[in-house]
Length: 303
Image (cartoon, rainbow, N blue to C red; front, side, top):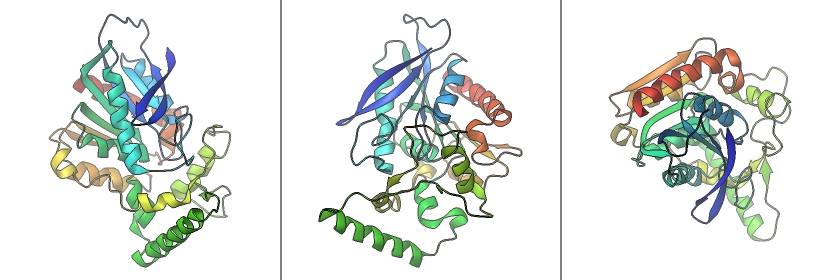
């Protein structure tokens, strides 16, 4: 069963979908999981898919739209603010603690893609999160500034920041907010990898949603470039930690590095053979085993 819910992140009202198990009984206490969507996504896509499936295993799950995105409040629309998105995770935990049927000692968090990085960032200081899992995780700060495999030189990163600064000046003087595509709106011949996969998911009938129009505020870059999802995981990420990544994902190194560096004594990198980054969003042959792994992980640590 699913119901629409609203909760606050400071002054912004966020929209979420709350999933409850079959046979749900409000007089009982259930473990709960916060589920964060990828950058450019919304709760009705892969986050909702995983949340729904995990609820079938006896968990209360909450998939929600990030601040400035989807049905959640915030202007400018489609701002990708990593610090706000990290706070979104904490706010979602806040909301779960207000529900009488949630066992507040047994709250976990799951994030997909950039949502995975935001989940890891939040969990370092959010001690109410007792178990942390990610699927196709990326650190958006590194991905958007340095590119895949950290191939973009610093000189080029600074050139982009100069453009962002110029755009801020333009907008301060009356220009309209500039947006760019999150993934390529049109594929160039021979384009491969996560960005090409993102086009196939977000821009085609495969995964597109009216609330995820493949655009983000261009000046988001000046916030993204200074964000690091993993900055303190060697000290503070002590909770049980599971990272699931595809063997053929060009972003796999983010999961490998996070598991290697995390302070947790109970940590695992689970490689899904044959899967790419986006295949883990919705392809049944990969989502099924990933959900089974997540169910076991959260059962071990939250039930």
